Structure formats: structure tokens, C-alpha cells
Amino acid sequence: MVAPEAPDYGDFKDLPIDAAVLPWFAWDDRQALPSPKRQASSVWQPVRWRDVPAWGSDNLEYAWGALLRSCEAAPAPLKPYCAATRQLSIGSAEQRLAWLMQQWQPYQVVAADGNPKGLLTGYFEPMLRASRLRTESHQTPLYAKPDGLRNGQTWYTREEMEVNPSALEALRGKAIAWVQDPIDALIVQIQGSGRVEITEPDGRVQVARLAFAAHNGHTYASVARVLLDTKAITSPSWPAIKAWAAANPSDVQRVLWTNPRTVFFQEEDLSGMDAQAGPRGAQSVPLTPMRSIAVDRSSIAYGTPVWMVTRGPTFNSARLVVAQDTGGAIIGAVRADFFTGWGPDAAQLAGGLKQPLGLWVLWPRDLP
Image (tube, rainbow, N blue to C red):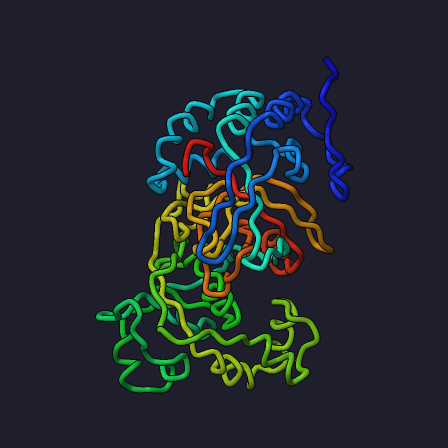
């Protein structure tokens, strides 16, 4: 019998492939391919495991935590597979590979017109310092959800929340914390959550998470786009925006008002194991740094394991991730927002991500 050979993965040929996948490549070659699966905004094209770029190069242990978290709120079709997922949390790398390759079928995600190319961006959980009380230096509030605000309701704009007496009255007592830099407030609103060190009136520092609670119903408008169009900045990065704000403090409020959307938060404890995971995504499970993605639900369902392949100036990777979140700008068949975690490195990586993407979903072989 001739030993199976590892496929040539082109741009990913430099990645070492686990030899444990080779017998399963040969086994998979003998299986009949299923029919394509049509989603609302994409088509899943069945492929052989050997045609999944760089499959076998990833350390699946790093992805298993995200798979386990998805089991906390698994969609009905995938719930029966959670028992094995939990059991394999103490299994070997070879056992995990064998289970995935034998029980799951890979499909390449393509657009309705057959285009397999997409876009990868990134997001992160900001970290900032705040004061529980308004002070001379901390003047920008981060608000809890106003009483009576309903999902889908259009409320006051960002500008009105600062100048309209009725809006200010509705927000009375709703400030969770106050930050020094209004750009930091914008960042945490855009990202949807953040970690904060809140200085209490007695001097204690409370570490907490501000998690997304609601928004005011207005369409998001990019502050970076305004600054680019007026040539105030040349790069749409947070460091560039902060540098502009520091040099033009009298113009900051006017520019921020061009984005009418504001996000409201709820404060959550951030201690013990909670500190080791990200905020809860749209699947209602904590996000796992470097292993969770936000997707278009009309293309990929929450809880679906996804093989993500990307090469670009910022990030080169082929890895197993899990669809656990969504976002207003995450629209399209082959579209993902990659959760990079928290801290300066995560912020830098997320801020620089805008590059080509390929996605292969994994779906149980015995499901239609």
C-alpha cells in the first residue's frame, strides 16, 4: 500500500502538517461527497479534507475552548455533538482530528455567484480607566440603557444626548462611569464592550466589564471617514484619530456628533474565570480570543465550526474558529470579523485587519 501524501497547500506550504491527518485523507477520498447546501446568502460547496488549505496545521486544543463554549447555547442541529465535544476536551490531538474528519464534512463557503473570496476584519475588547463620579478630568459618560428604551426604537442622537434637555433628563443617573478621553468612549461603543478599571468615590478600583445593552437606533456613521474626507488624517486608525483629537480638542465634539449612534452598556463583574474570556457574543456565549468570529447569520449559523484562511500584510493564518457573533457591518457570504482579545496587542491586530478571507464550514456528515 502506498503511503498517503500531504497535499500541496500553495501559499501555506510552509506550515507543518500533522501526519495524523494523512490516513484520514485517504479514508475521506473514498467517501461520496454530499450535495451543496444553499443558505440564504451563500452556497456551501462540499470538498475533500485534503482540499481544505493547511488542514492539519492547527493546534486544535486552542480551538476546543470555543467549541465547548458554543455548546452552552448550541443550535438544535448541533446539540447532539456536544457530548463528544466535551469528552474530547480531555482527548488527544489525534482523537480530536479523527473525530472531526470522520464525523464532519467540510464545505467551502461561496457567494451566490460562486465567488469564494471574502473580507476579514478584526475587533477587540478595549481596556480603559474610568471614574465612578464625574470629575474635572473625566467628563465623558458611558451610560446604562435608559428606562423605557425598546429594542428597535429610534431614540435621541449622540448630539441630542448632550444638548437636548429632555434627553439629558432621561439620562439622569444613568452614567455607569466617566472617562477622560471621548475617543476612548467612542472606541468602546463601536467595539460593543470594554474592560474598565473604575475608581470609586472612596479610592478603591473596581475592575468590571461594560457589556452591550442596547443602542439608540440610529445608523452608524464613521468618524474616521469624516476625518479622511476632510484630509484631517491620512490613515483610518485609532492612533491617527487620537493624535488628531489631541491636536484639535475644540473640534472633537463636532466631529463625534457626525456619528448619531450611541451604545448603552450594562456593568458585569470581571473576576475569576470571567476575566479569561471575552464578552458574550450574539450566540450568548463568551467569546474566545483568536478563536471566535462574527459572521453574517444568513450565511453561517451561530455555533458552526469554521476553518478560516487568510493572508495579508497584518496577519497570516489558517485555523479553526467558531461563529459566535455578528455585527451590523458583517454582511456577505464570505465575511468575518475576528475577535482578537483585549489589550494593546489585540487592539493593534484588530485595527490593522482588512484583508482577503476564505471560509470552510464544518457540518456533521449525518445531517441534511
